[in-house]
Amino acid sequence: MRWIMLSVTILFVLSIFGYYGFDGTSRRSGGDGDGIQDYAVAEVNGKKIMRSALEENLRRYVERANISNLESADMPKLRSDTLDGMIIQMQLENEAKTQGIQPSEADIDKAVSRISDNFPTKEAFQQYLDQTGTKIADLRKSLSEQLAQQKLIETALATVKVTSSDVQAFYDKTKDLFFRQPAGVKLNFARFKSLDAAKKAQGALAPSSKWDEVMASLSSADLLEKSPYEAPIFVPDTGFVDKLASIASLDIDVPSEPITLSSDDILVVLKREKVDARVVSFDEVSKDVTDLVTRQNQQSVQAEYLQKLRSQAKVAILDASIFPAAEVSKDVAPVTASGDSASTDKK
Image (cartoon, rainbow, N blue to C red):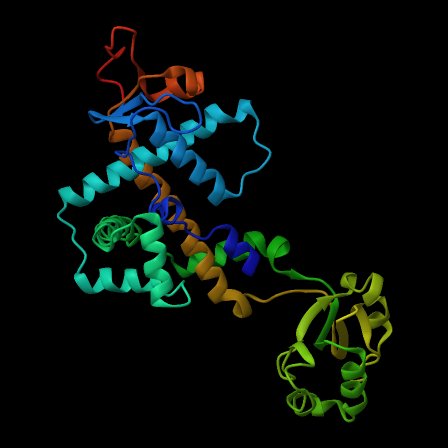
């Protein structure tokens, strides 16, 4: 269920852009260090998008998306996606200004603190700002703009309503796919840093209900990880393979012999209960299903809202050679050699 929810989690546009992400107005003169002469590749609402800004945002997009093994054939589509992101960012910024949305100083302070908390000390945060040439005033201005844009998206998502019948219908349609639990066992586990520590713990587990007491008696130098006695984990029968194969035949409430996963990672498990294959009941997962359906609906509304903003932008492609031909002809107006767009009314 967690995996399913992660797969549809809302990713606000701002989280994709990052604190210094897509910037439709940034530009550099001359070359960009990669042998690319800087020039305008597109125009959005009368503002030029420079090749250097496009390539820099493309680099950030690839890094954040963890895209690897890129080929030259991939670049036109990636540039098109990056340009779309830059256009949406610019549209969000304009819309926030039009609606007069302005976050409070307290909200900006909190945003700065969240960034600062990622560093071990305030001094390290300041050192990072100094090294990157970032002034705190510029950071606060950027965060203010992003918070305002986030408010726009949150306002659009506030229209999402999920009824109990929606939730029940989703469960009924997907229960055999998402909510069928295979046969398996519930068990406690503990991982130790040495075989001696694992053997000592295993020998002390009589009765097995002393699990928490035994684990508490161990030092952090001996114990890598453990599950609380009252919170056993579920493992399907299909999970007991290779080094874990011996667990399949383990009796209930009998601690296993130490299982060596590696020289400094020794496992001891305590099988607590056999679990038959079943479909998890609606009552057990209703809250998770409600969250899931809500997130799916939010994702749909967010996509529609951003696409609407994107469609309202007046875009002209100034260098069609670096974008896919299909993408260029679909919704943007390529500019002729004379500098005039093929149709000024096209989006």
